[in-house]
Image: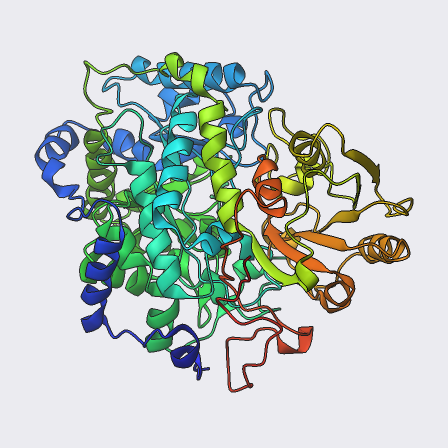
Length: 621
Ligand code: GLC
């Protein structure tokens, strides 16, 4: 299926590979610090010297990423010479989610590497996709969909830099971010992980995020490795094309190569140019073939054509999806170019099978050496192999974890991410000196709904999920004059007599396939709250928390003002900064907003482009 109106809509032209360098240049100048592509191959001498000393078992161990909660015994770190460990969204330390518990756990596992012959330190990876949001008290930023509406690469870079500092505070040196997906169907539960439906915007902000995470140099002790994901076409899968019970991110992207390159591959060369140390192949397939085992995509395109010098990390248990026989699947994926396997629990079996595959000649030693060389040169590049550098977490960073300074960056991001969709009779900005403002909605005093998925838990959860943040209701109370009375009812009743009402509604937290929705309507309780407020015959300001454009026609009709706030994270004062006029709304839609579900997906095929709000829309005052 070929996009007919991508040319019109995003003023992006289908970029044959010969024009990609132009994009790189433009993106380079777009970023605050133009830098040549980070070359990891400059560390080949050191990597090769170490490689020459390694046994096959030690090499295979470097290619394995187990999960902290999946370790059958902590001593498996040294027994299997593990190269990496991850904590996915729910893999918390036994001692809980405090900063100390995380730091103690990571340090303890890292120390075990020193019991091995070669003492090669672990890379520890987490999904710090909008701040170090696994950890209580972290600064939680707007999810990428909101950052996309800021159109501000420097702010995206600054947010990533702050996130890197908070991740490093726990001794972790790798985040599985940025997601540079180009989501094309709002029914996808991962839409909010993407910056935009526009590949050029996804590319520009992806570069900024990589630079923010890795900063000038991965050896910077305040930087973390970035991971551009999910390669390639994760945002272009056909709704319903996944195997029974699996999410859209495990579906099939059915496009010709030119269209795949123009939309979904486009953000990767810039991310590589910006120095992304790792790339994560997608669970999804391209025209029926799983990306995780796709030699053309992983080796011919990414490594040979685009010159990617870092290493590929599989997605969580993604390898086993490539073939019913796990050992065969391992052979396919490693031979296709997969360098490290995210095998949370099956790492012992992976170790055994890959060893057998090499001994049987199915996987050549040269492929193992290439994979391990890639992993080692990244570890050399980040100074991990330097015996004079501290092995464990720098706990001096704890004092700035979730600090006011960090939260100010997140608050600015919230402000700039808000998109004003309607403002009848200048309902906004509201007066800080109003006699009374009535606040409503299920998400007005709900930090969990405000942060969305990937917050403390994989799916996120409603309620007081993490300390240190500010809900919208708390922010309103902090913003208005002492004389202003603030009243609250979740269901919108009791607003009579107030000067205005603010109602905060929208989606509850979700992540990945559990967020896929065949319909995109507002909850009945949200609509009821607005109805109840309208009975008070006062101006109603609607604030929507959502991970994507959803069908809002009825609510929009009833609202006097309507703000798309996406999933803003912990800093609710970024919202009151705008609705009470200290800052103007400047956000611009990074996704087209559909009028009805029948239009979704809006960006594909020959249907007329007639949305509720066009890509790039946003009012101000
Ligand atoms: C998940 C996601 C990926 C994440 C990984 C580790 O399934 O697909 O984005 O980085 O597993 O949590």
